[in-house]
Image (cartoon, rainbow, N blue to C red; front, side):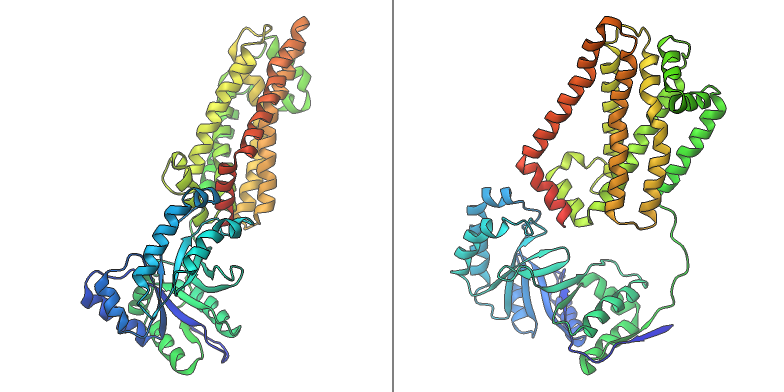
Length: 463
């Protein structure tokens, strides 16, 4: 057991995000436990049962009520303005007479950080403030802030939901820092976590009681768990792909010289394919299948590095068709694999059908797949950076490099095929590289001109 102690300082207040029981007697017992441990604030979700509201009138807690308006973009707020105002007014009228109810949360994990949010939400807030005696706040990124001072949070959340003994050290670090910095924040815990911590780790309960009396924070920490976490599944998949490449080299002897010729004697490689001296298709198909799996890894790593759990939920809330494997980051892996397989099928047909100098589909496969040998190097570096905790910027650079190489594979293959197209070279280049470029530019223009889609991405990345 270790012990940490923090110097005397102004105490932050303690709060509970209360998932209250339906039984009134059990609710009263939990409220007594909260009070004994120095809890000053409770947040409940709207609507609150009238019997519970009556019970809360008799308690010393300051109450916050959170309405269920989550993951709203600016366009959502504009289109729902009248409906939102009506619901807000009804809630404010419902709680008007409850004097210990201090504030109402109007939005949760919505696009409140956007520069235009203030002007967009102002008509709603002005109308509501004129009719209510409560303060109004929003919740985002595990912090609470009033609309009147959006840049200054007044509360923060210790976000764990299910108690584990290892959480005590994390709680000690965060709460101790608030104490030592003379913080005036409300430090919220989820009720399930608090009750489990109170029951399963008595030292936690004792420390909170002592903090309430002495204003000094110290806690006996549980012995650290030296067991190492299992490797992420993407590491196992990456190793499997390397093993798969070794197996391919073993079973397909032509694949190793094919790799060397593609990068060191590219013209000779292209001539072999176009003159049909290299006929096997198995290696090319295997490389394309592996490329799809590599794409899934890249999609997963980029999404997991750029989005929080709340950002993920917001993204899939607005684009539920992408929830292939549920509301989790693994859905991005599946999305990457499926999208890559579809694009590869289109790319091969696009290369093969206009080519008058190719008689066999295997020629298009082998020319197109050669670039994907680079996946092993790029994705290995990407996963290594991800596992070792590098920031999203470096990971994004290697992710972009992977996409550029993938994009370039089509154009390189088209240019290689055009070399022996004779008088049809210009037409083939237009039908492949030319149209490919036009389609790519068109898709980018459509994406960046779609305000609703841009807001979804902005919301997901800002949470």
